[in-house]
Each structure stands twice: as C-alpha cells, then as structure tokens.
Length: 467
Image (cartoon, rainbow, N blue to C red; front, side, top):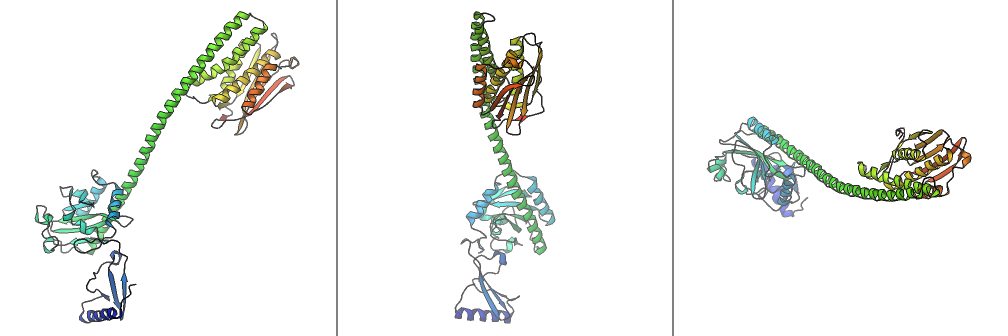
C-alpha cells in the first residue's frame, strides 16, 4: 500500500466522484494522469486506483526494470535476465524444425493470416525459428513489432498499421513487406521471461480481431514454449549422452593402454620364468635320474612352472587381471601325475567351482595346490598302488573359498614334507588363509580356507573339466 497525503486523498476522491458523475469511468476503476490501465498480472511499477462504493485503494507493484518500450510499457523482467533465458534455450540460428513449422502453419490457417512467425528477440534483432509466408529469416529489432510484444504478458495487436502513429512509417509497413495488421502473443518461459513471440501478419487490416482470436493465439504460443523447453531438455540429454560416450571412449583408450602394458608385463615375466625353468631342467639332467638332488630340482622346476602357466594364461586371455584358479589347479594335477608317473594308477576327482582371483592370490593358491598334490602323490601312493586324488574348490558364502586336497593313499607314510608344508603355510599367511593338514580315515586331507580378494567372484556348481 502506498501512503498519500490528505491533499492527495482529496484529489483522488474528487477525481473519482467526477469520473463516476460524467460516465468516463466504468466498473469501479479510475486511472489518473500518469497512470495506465493494464492487466493486473502485467502491472510493474504502475499505480492502480480502485474506487468502489465510496472507498478507494491505491496499490503499487514492485519495479523490476527501468526500461520501457516506445509506447511506454514497462519490461516484464530485466532485459539481461530475458536475454539469458533466451541463451539458455540454445535455439538461435538453428535449422528449421517441423515441430515449430507445424504451429505457424496452424496459426496462419486458424487465424486467417498469410504470414505466421515464431520470432525470438535478442539484443539487436528478431530471428525467426519458423517463418511461414515470409522469405526473410530476421530483421533489426528497432523496427520489430515483436519488440513491443515481449514487454507484455498478453497479446499485442495492431489492427491497422496505417492508423497507428507508432508504425505507419515503419519500413515493414511502407516497404515491399506491406504489413497492415499484426497480432503477437509473447513466448513466456516458466520463469516469466518473454523470449519471443508467436505472431501473425497480414497485408490488410483486421478490425474484427477479438478476444477469441487472442485466446487462440495464446494457446498456440504456449505450444511453442512447450516445444522450446522440450527441445532444450532433449538437447541437454543428448549432450549428456555424448559426454558419457566421449568419456567412455577415453576410458576405453586408457584401459586399452593399461591392458597392453599388463600383457607386456605378463609376457616378459613368463619368458623370464621359462628361461629359469630351462636352466633348472638342464642342471637336473646333469644330476642324474633318481638322485635326491634331481628330485629337489624337479620340485623347484615344477613350482616355477606353476607361476609360468599363470602368467601365460594372463598373457593369452582377455582377463588380464584375474585368473580362474580352479582351471589352473586341474592343470597342476595333470602335470604332477605325469611327473610321478601315476597317470594310470591314480584317478583325479576334481570338483572345482570357478573361482576368479587376482594374479597375486592366484599365484599363491596355485603354488599351494602344487605342493599339496605333490605331497599326496609322492607320499600316499607307492608305484604299484592304485587310488583316488580328490580336489575340491568350494564357495564359502560371499566372502571366501575353500580348497581341499585329499587322497586315499597310505596315510601311514606320513604325507609330510618339511620344506613343502613350510612353503604352504608361508603362502597361506600371505593371503590371510587358515590351513589344516593331517590324516583322515583312509588317507590324508589338507584344507585351505581363504578370503576372496575384492572384485573377484566365486561361482559354485560350475565344475571345471578334469585335465
């Protein structure tokens, strides 16, 4: 509410009485000099005086901008904010789109006008996203009818441009375009910014353009705004997807570089282990068959072979950072049977789930399995004794796995190997596993319970084929 002096109140009451008396004011509303009648939603910094039943009220809306258009209308929102809202739509200077052309065709047909435009008004020009019936794509802002419309919240209509002193000398009126009629509805965003207009134009006046046509123009303008906002959202989503795609390509390139490096590392380690194994084999042959030194060298060579095969697997498969350790254990069993000459005497019963482990853990588990299988075959089975070697790899919930090596050989022979079991226990400690080994009814049993490393999986009930 605006406070006024007693003299001001007396002036207003006298003016109100005079307006009612001589019939110059209707519907209980009064406007005094310096004030302009406007729709209440568009009042911005203008005083509105209501006189009703011998009482009056003076109201003022907050001033949002000091700018005015040529006919004295205040801006709906500050021009800088309006231009920012237009920029956020990212639609200026884009190719024509059927979604907007369909609206201008519909507006021209329904409102009986040869020209219909979706006009977006920036700082210096009005640019047409859709221009039905007009060959140009933009004009200067200072001659644009739409420059008046964007300062309003409702349609702006010029029934006859020749009769309007604001436009009778406008180049769009006097030139080849020959505009005699204009009606435009502002394109109001959700933030209340009029970024442009949907307008129709004709070469003849339209003195009968009434409220029904204005409401239709408003509805069509709202359709344009919806399409602009949907377009903006779709474009933002497209850019987000494209950004994700570029990021994915960059990551894929980085992963490819990493994979190439890992593959080269595994290749070089594999070659080095192969060279060491060859040297050990040569030395073992020189020591003679059946000697204790030869047996030690063979066991060392087999330990190196376990590490060699794991790095070979990592080098030759797509999985560069994890190994199916169950498959590796079955290969270890097959090699140990051949090394001990027990392929025909000992049957391997392998029931292994697919347990994927990182290379460090897989190396240790492979070495543990190698030692335990070697112990069982070397101590449990004499050359003329037949039997079964059981190998089990089991899932123990979501957090670990269990390796069991059991034979039905001669438990009385001990099944112990000082260096071998010392190595097993040391390796078990490195992977934070618990290890138990000892005689059971009808043989010897060793069991390893270990946690699964992060990022690996244990899938039970998927047996690994026996080697």
